[in-house]
Structure formats: structure tokens, C-alpha cells
Amino acid sequence: MGRKKLQLQRIENKSRCQVTFSKRRSGLIKKARELSVLCDVDLALVIFSSRGRLYEFCSADSLASILERYQSRITEEAVASGAPKAEDPQAGYSSLQLLKIVQRQLEGPNFEQFTAADLLQLENLLNNTLTEIRAVKVHSYAHWASLVQTQLMMGSIRTLQEKEKLLREEKKLLEGKIAAGEKSGNDTTAASMATLPLLR
Image (cartoon, rainbow, N blue to C red):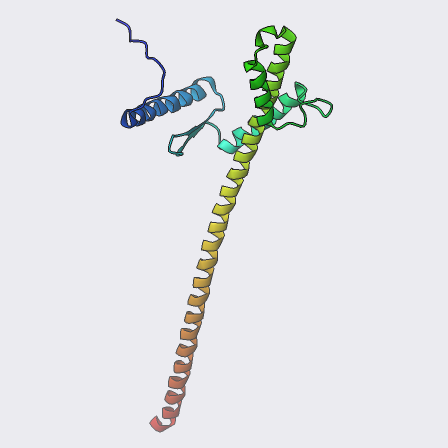
């Protein structure tokens, strides 16, 4: 007997949803790891849970390097595919506005009257919008990653500065002890020199 076909829909039970998420996330990361090893590919996987927790897997040195490669590839494809140029009527619109335009056209009463050329134009508009959105997302992630890295470096610098301050204080304390030791050593040397003639 085969497995019963699972109907894909949102799981309403919170505990079942969490268990399913945990199992499927682990399975997805395992499959990503296997794919990267078996096929020798660079792979990045980013998952945000419903609570906003981040889970990630990266087969390369860093997730940022893969995202930079992705961003450069998207930019190259946008240039190669002829992304909206200045003379393009949609060039002044934001990505959200372009998506709303496409949605209005698809939901409108004249949808059945679209020609193949109209549908191709809508498809190109959607592809260009998607490319822009991806580029913005990758740029914002790269910016976020650089901010996190900067904050970590600043934290390290503050820690090192505190250590330096403690070492300077310890140095002053030791110098004071050495100076006090030399002074008391000079006093005892002078006293012993004074007693030497008496012994003769």
C-alpha cells in the first residue's frame, strides 16, 4: 500500500505546526547538504520561522559570498534581458506599483481579450519587477550583514580597549611597587653601609 496523498494546506494546530516545521526544516537542510556534496554545487538556504527565527545553511565559505554572486547574476540578467529603460513607460513606477498594474490587468473584465503579445508584455513586466525585488532584497541583506559585522568588530574593539585600560592600570600599580621596593632597598642599603664602619 502506498502513502495517502497529503493535502497541502496550513496546519492550524500550533503544536503540530511546530513539529512539522522542525521535521521538514531538518529534512530540507539535510537534502541541501546532500545536494551540495553529491553535485559539488554552492548552495545557500535561508529559512525564517513564523516567529521570525532565522535558520540557514551554506555550503560555501559564507552566505554573504553566495548572495553577492546571486546579486551580480541577477544584475547581469537584468541588463541582458533589457530591463526597463528610461524610454519605457513603466520605468518611473516602483515594483509595488508595477505589480498592482499587472494584477488589475489580469483581474479586469477584458482578460479574455488579451492577445499573446499582451500576455508576453505582462510576463516581461512581471519578470522585470521580480528581478528588481530580488536585487533590493539581496542588497538589503548584504547591507544588514555588513552592519552586523561592523557591530561585532566594534564590540571586539571595545573589549580590547577595556583590556588595554586594565593592563595600563596594572602596569602603573607594578611600577609603583617596583619604585617602592627600590626606595626601601636603598634605605636598607644606606643603613647597612652606615653600620659597616662600626663593625671594623
